[in-house]
Length: 160
Image 1 (tube, rainbow, N blue to C red):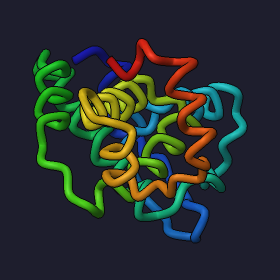
Image 2: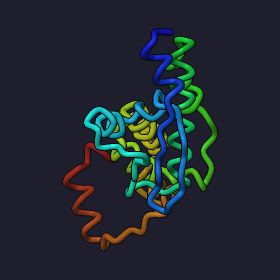
Image 3: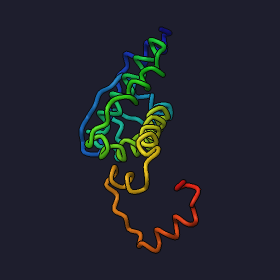
Image 4: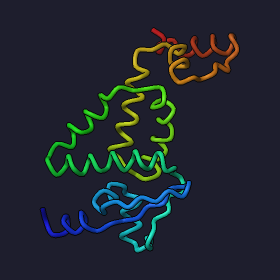
């Protein structure tokens, strides 16, 4: 481990979620987020870094992902860690959290987590009809039968 990597592993960063929950994490874990990394580099981070767009529940999951990613990178198996996370079974609660996960990954600029979240959703809708997708994500059909027919006619290739 290089000296700067050792420093990152030992230095602690404090993060505060939108609902006031406080997390103390190693700097190496925190800087998986490009947003946090830039705040630290630009000396915008005082004692506590506020994350007004991320709840404690979601931040906890994001930190867990980043820890796994840092640990996997240290053992040169980051891709395997992503594969393991992607292949984990998806529950109804996970479905409800995907939107928040996506928004957090985007806000915190964690490319690996954003890619993983998008790929998971893409895999969930692949090969499904619009009706099945609506059911999976609990989306109300707000098209009239006429509007739906027009969309199907204009995009017939997508329904083949």
